[in-house]
Length: 375
Image 1 (cartoon, rainbow, N blue to C red):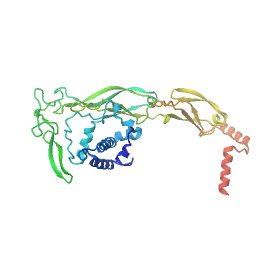
Image 2 (cartoon, rainbow, N blue to C red):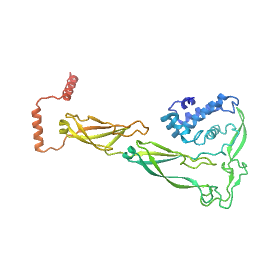
Image 3 (cartoon, rainbow, N blue to C red):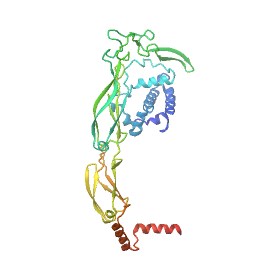
């Protein structure tokens, strides 16, 4: 069974802003929450569907991938796992708790389970040719690593963290509250331990109790042929480490392509502006045309007009998704010399005299248009 469009699920327009999406999700969640519909499979499914839609559309990065590639762009199976990315249903349930100022009781701890680490974004600059043919680059980035001094505990070597007396090690404090909807159980993060469930009395001198330190990482990344400016290469599991034994986040390589002094890119095609002389345009010539793969010969016919575009098949850029290869287009521009020698001027005058009152096709068309305008 195919998934419904996420915008349709929440009942919002594709141009809806963050507030509209959050408001729509809140309405759906309040209506279909399992605590309010304990025996309704339909409400349970709609709540799950709305939560999944909100998880994608509330993230600018995930929403962009969804708008571009649909469900395939945010399919969690592409990341090598099941459930929602970034912590799954527990993240979404945590979000709804925050929206409702506490919300309904989930019947389980929200912060005790494994949580996926944060994603990292790293920009890489490549040349026009490297983007066209692919290249391997060494990427440097920083991420958190477990402190080797305390082995990630945050406590000074030889000491241990103690269970928080306020929350009894759960990291949360629950309390009942009467509302127009009836009595509901609110859960808040323990203020004493910050949700960790433990208190570190003697902190590690290296990481100052954090348990993690910032480290530089280096990896070699193969950038495929055909990438364009703003292309994104995901590297699963290279992001920040998770908590409570959760998996690492992901690393996203954002490509920046330098401009080229000869070529411009339009999709998979390459455009090249090439100046020619008046004599070449009038008489034709065997042009030596630069391409990404070296110079090639192209026989330009006589009488070529300025602005004419010629096509070199399969001399463009490889499509990164396997849809063949683009072409190269040569746009010729006839250059009019600004400085002429006396001999050149005499020859042009002789040419003009020899031409007499001959009217060329384009000039004739222009004259006809002027006449039509005046009459």
